[in-house]
Length: 302
Image (cartoon, rainbow, N blue to C red; front, side, top):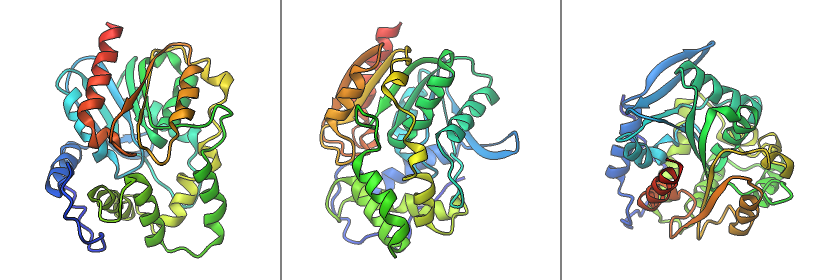
């Protein structure tokens, strides 16, 4: 099942090639979507990718439609591991907070008969994975925690709190909200190809998740405080599995200093790695660096 994300509204002027050609991105997206397997898990209809053999690695999704940004890592590690990800459920009418999302993740793992796995997550995808780690630590062989930086006081990062408070009261269009977030994810100029890919993926949520208002979906599922109240200092000290923390050196959303403070609270940290030049979605743009860091981490655990 191939998905085409070429939406007619995508920002023009995409001459910048960088490493993110549209055709290449589509091929990497297709690696995920052509291998979706429908699954009904206790009444929840979703799609699961389950490829490769060996010790399992579970990728926690950021949001529906963004699985493609993990595709390069999934392709790489599926050569030596059993690799799993799934299509996250989305709802614009109610908050699907950290507990519900952690429950979905746990249901996928149980559905596949997995007793222990390595987990990898990025940005907002780290919230349910961390919640699951606190609730079911015995599931975790290890955890690669990328690009989520609550402050040591464990408040929401300032810009998400600002947007969460502001969005319900101002008449922004879906188009403006999507463009704002895509720009934040790309960290670059309006002509960036990365911003175009982000924009296309957010617009695709309307089609794949049956969401009619992307703005309302953001308010319920991305900027809700219910997604960010999971990480107290006391909770982080309970995460005793081996954890590798990773961030980009030029991310506009997550603070390098805040993630360093988070890493110091972890009792079994295996380091804090900085990926150079990757902006927010560095797991795609700088997949080679990320792969090397994760491979070295796994080698330490053997």
